[in-house]
Image (cartoon, rainbow, N blue to C red; front, side):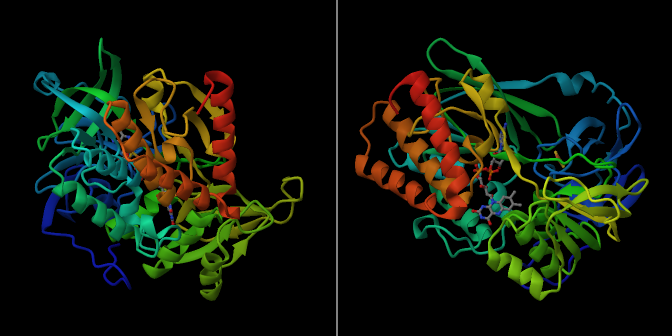
Length: 484
Ligand SMILES: Cc1cc2nc3c(=O)[nH]c(=O)nc-3n(C[C@H](O)[C@H](O)[C@H](O)COP(=O)(O)OP(=O)(O)OC[C@H]3O[C@@H](n4cnc5c(N)ncnc54)[C@H](O)[C@@H]3O)c2cc1C
Ligand code: FES
């Protein structure tokens, strides 16, 4: 199931490693995640559900859904999409409730760190925030739970639209690499990878966060980090749809599929049905075709395609049918996806009986939107509201990305679902504003310039949703807290 030839990507898999799945000897490569190596070996069932004993598999590929948790080298609940496979590793399906780990594992080492600005999340928003702040000589700690920086950019092989200043015209993977290089060279930024920021605690003077770093033996080291300000840029998680068998292995999020294909060079299956024709659904479908995977069709509930025409046209050239005014009725299969049924919708979104169509596929890919990951920011006590145009619950914030909790800033998808260029500018604004909050004089013309660029990016028809979301957020902010 590994992709051997690709028109754009060359997969640097590294050394071949032997590991064990439920006692069976299999092979992976040192640069693969455990989950990717399992899928490459055609292992799709990672665990069973607590109540109904149903098979569970990979879904999001970015640490957000918990469906890939397994027992690794005796340690339970390891998110196998975030951990690399290693020689001799013992990976087991963990049935039902995980056994308690032994005492050695529970004993944690704790280190205290402090900084001026803590940045949580190493996606485009967090990377730009850290770089912008560090220019002023302040001490920055940047934390990400993945083992590499870049967030969702590391799997985006297409060239970006948007502003030149945010590197439009470059591929997402190259933007991520460029930003990472700048971060690595910057002496004011300390990077913690494989590190999850799990909690916020009140502290007398500053903000206090708890961080768990995964070590090579899979035990954890705990950091207590005290910071004067924090920028939270934890991104978003993929949405689910309700339909029979939506939990079967083989029903994957579009971002998860993109991670398998573009980061690890592993095919999720042979025949994919894509659900959702926004840019993500269209782009991932095209990337699957590039990887030699058959795309059986794209299903869209709306009467017209949601994404850019240019992306849809590429699929049409490959003869991929796009079924508008259709929905997924159900997925078939016992231990994994073996097919799906789609059905036509009338103008009131009701299924039209007799229009059901069976699609022969082994993967159903959901590209039905993202929800902001607000769990951490809500712990800080920042005011959170439901804004449908922003994708769900978001922290209310002012024009400088500061929330109602003084010194806590947000940026990127977490502050409202938009796209990577906007995430980068929001990161820069939050970075500058967090420095100013420390009492350091900032370049105001830069701030004005970033605000103008945001307006430009949101001006077109594809920026409309984000624009409306931010208008709602501003209105609510003004009515509760006054000026912006
Ligand atoms: C499949 C797909 C295709 C897309 N295509 C495009 C496109 O063509 N063009 C475009 O402009 N945009 C695209 N986007 C959107 C774009 O990727 C996002 O808007 C952008 O990545 C958001 O950046 P971010 O920094 O807010 O979040 P992310 O890139 O998601 O980064 C968030 C980071 O935070 C880390 N994190 C989360 N929680 C914690 C925690 N508690 N502790 C430590 N670390 C944590 C995560 O590991 C992650 O690295 C696409 C998105 C997807 C999913
Ligand atoms: S957390 Fe690993 S697949 Fe979602």
